[in-house]
Length: 397
Image (cartoon, rainbow, N blue to C red; front, side, top):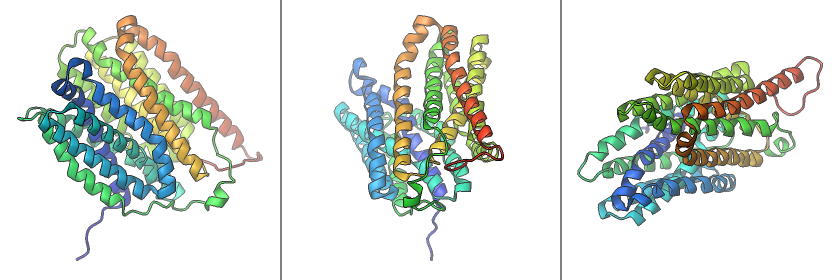
């Protein structure tokens, strides 16, 4: 009897969901575990180590993927992820902070390798379908937005807090890694490597990286500052803060159902412009007041804007015709995103304390305006170059 194999894109979306569930489980639990196994001064060390491991993995993963193929890369990443989950569970049983730090580093490697799932999905399909494949893979984030925090909350109440959360994720991560290791990740419908290497990129890379990384940084700054701002505004119930953040994460990934279609229909630059404008609208809502509906609306708008900026930039990077340089650009983009995210995460609390919530949004608003101007300018240039009678080089998209 033939065995059932889910479609490759479904496997990649499931891998994205699992990778992000692991990430959200770490985010929700690692500080508590650090406090439980160590001391208050070491509480954030596991998450810091995971973030550093993710950041360092990105350029290495790009090189290994080119040398050995994405299948072997994803198989190895999932294997290290499963090992990290197992060691995390063992560390909780043995009450060992050192072992949990090793586990956090391995899980950081798994998360870094997993940043390539969306690009692998785009490379498996014909060029006309790449934007939709890239966006749909990110839909796994919707599941992770609910699954990771729920798993952390449920496992926190067991006799050995958080042990079952890490243990339950181990088998699916390992099985999915084995499944991805059997897939063929050769690009579909692309130009031969020798020919593609001679083509110029269809889009200026500096503005693309600015929009992708800048949008990630603005989102991270306001997202991490929101819980503190809510507390200062008198919203003491942590359940309200959790609900605001949870809907924000849903807004980050649910639009992936249509983002690829929007890019196919209108192009990436207007989608990027819309993302920057939504970021600005979120800051405008924050400046209007600090009520609970205002926080909910602002964080939802911020999530929607992040999705358009992240998917739009990823789409343009994925169109680079030179495969080795494309892989390096993907790595540099994600390194910039994670690096800036780390900086704004560290700075969010001190900035809210020093400047206040309204002032922070006032200072962030010009950043959203700059991103909007860059996207609008590039959209105008693309429209000008596409006029009949003008000679175009490279690819279109």
